[in-house]
Length: 401
Ligand code: ASP
Ligand code: MG
Figure (cartoon, helix red, strand yellow):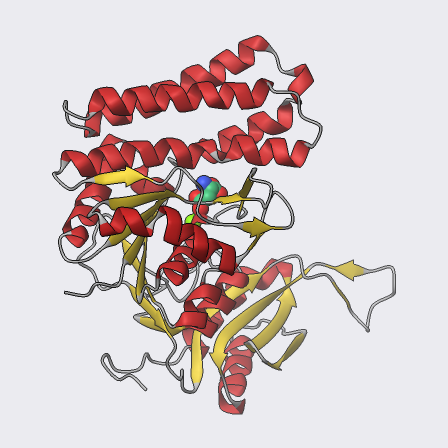
């Protein structure tokens, strides 16, 4: 038995309704039978959008009573429904009560006089994760494994109220104080993702999609060697599947490759997720909540070896072409082949574009990998062509440097 805590993070669609909560809880309960477990939860999908939209459209003084009541009604309905579908009779009254207490606190936060709008917005946005955490703790408990929500926001931040920077040392202390004792007592510790706490004790956020980062930050603070990021896709694919229908699963990636891919737009991971992981050598597994038996993508610190792993598309890459007049700007995009390419890879990419009749305004090798700048109107086509030509065959499974 490994006694280093495992951290599992569930994304918003993995807790999108009662049935999904049950799946997520089953994965957590199974894992908790073998080792200490902390679970990071996102808000039920769509909830954060609702909360932020509400915070934006209302300043504390101008909030209309009717719209506050409507927000309360819709959040209560959705969360109570999920709880009733997924929590056993034994735990349901407590879960319902906690949800209603949280919703009342949300209303108080909305109606409190606020001078700092950024602080107010963060204070409202964090309620999605607080609500989903209460339900998940109830569902895991219903499956016979004791679980408790960590209410004290263990992740300490500095700087702004949104997309705040993490204070790793204070976070370690707070985790030792609020998370580790629960694990020692045999509880699954449920930590609301995305939520941070300022030095003054106010709620902050890690930025949109920040629950992934919460998971590796927590893993680093708890001395974990493994973090699972559970979502509704099989892992990290080698291109955006909406643009490249035959995008394939990447069995493994280095921290650098995964971090670069996330920074260049891969939606499955928050761009900063890999920083705490690479710092302390935590293996990150990206898996599908709805098919957890599939291998997913393993991200770790191995020597990547040569070749391109995946391709990303950056739009709105305005370039001024030397051959046209100064007034004439043309929208361009960049296709980036992430990995460690060589001149041969670059030549292959250029040739494939030429054969497809696509002009590359610029192409070359940058620290991140291959870069091909093309006009916006052929960007999707260029991505498809380059996906087919520059990606190296994956290293054989099991070969770890
Ligand atoms: N709920 C937050 C968001 O929607 C954080 C997350 O899901 O990772 O951005
Ligand atoms: Mg996400």
